[in-house]
Image 1 (cartoon, helix red, strand yellow):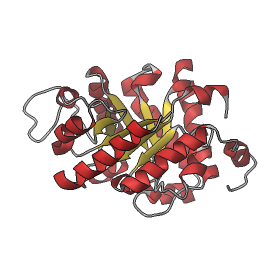
Image 2 (cartoon, rainbow, N blue to C red):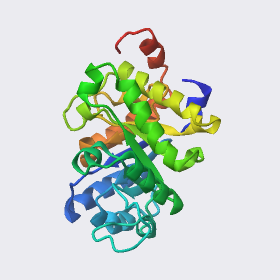
Image 3 (cartoon, rainbow, N blue to C red):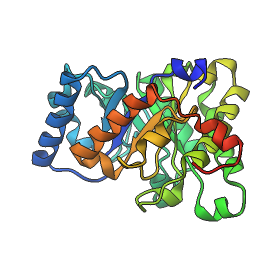
Length: 275
């Protein structure tokens, strides 16, 4: 790993999507809390839960080394927007993170880069950290335009957000074809895209080098170490595996082990070898 990559603290962030119940949530929160309290975890850990469970997350995780956040936020500060949740409301629940531009929001709700950028701005203004998602479809990958697609998505959103300080933004690369399918990019393929995104960030400002880029796309206990050992992968946005305390904790442990890993996946990727 480079000296710069060592300076970026790894983040393992769960995305529960539209799952959960008060009873099941309680057990999951308790397991994550206990793991964080019983272990000196050198990586940052958080969970992004459905909005109705933010109060439960706050009550369960306050005082623990585990952050919590939401999965979406309104592009507006307040007003007659029935069903929307503002960034200020999320902040009142102690949220740190909010996911914006997830591929499911882009596909099912037709969210544009302009809207995603407006949501990210609202999050930042309320003191939240937006996790800005980008990713290509299988058709775009097969057409050889995966790198250009994600670079364009990132640049389009950054145009609305501006060159924020590194600790105010997180990027998540989530290949659409790997979300919820059980398929995952190889470590080498994921590193290649992350390196392209890192280069894109540098083009928008020298301080942008420090922005963390997470991988999201069917990370499981059996592939987490290889992915999280890559030089430009600063953690994971974990979907289905974050709903199992055993799986989520295993991935957290893999992120910890990756800090001391001698794996040089970036070099493997540059050599065109699949890891």
